[in-house]
Length: 258
Image (tube, rainbow, N blue to C red; front, side, top):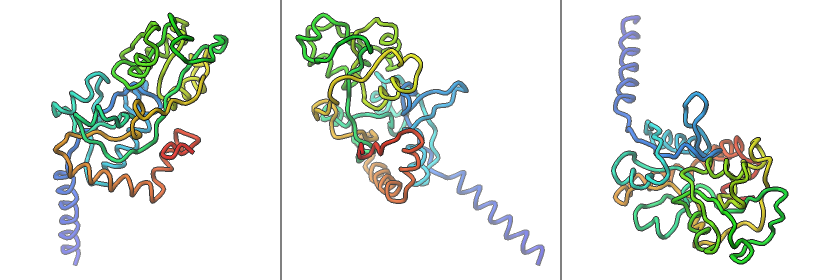
């Protein structure tokens, strides 16, 4: 009997090792410079809401996922070059991006906003009102597209990362910043540098710039992976896992913005 138990135990162990050894391996691409969605900790680990959601989806589809950091400007080219298998980096689903990649269903809604210095007195956000002012945004983003389109007579300054734009805003080197609503709320409410500033104006929800929400980007041919991720996303919404991750970072449900 003991010998049989040992044989059964060895078989179970082997099966577990085999399952691990042959588990699907996927690479999750992200930026790592967009807190609280994706950022690098002081220990050099990439964390954030995007990462927690991405790794949970990986678990649901039975994949082991490696997180790969990539500068924003090269994030779609990196996907197309097979550097990683999907992107989860708070990317707005826009018609322009759909020409290059496919997207999952949205995993949260999106809006953009303006940030100004608390004592600035800026209340109007038109081309005439901001003429000649320095306006910052992250390059290669829909926020940059918005600033360039709406404020042609301003001094538009584009930055490789949102953190660099935030630093220039805090130091007074730019007058206005355009960015994604949730990270900028985090910046002004929770960081030392952000104490300089405030959210201003109405939320920017123009679909031309914020698209259909925020989705996970995949190569056009990866339709099976797209379907599996959509199914997993629906599951974590339904069973409360999404809410648990959401509540770790936000006081509202960012899937509905309520």
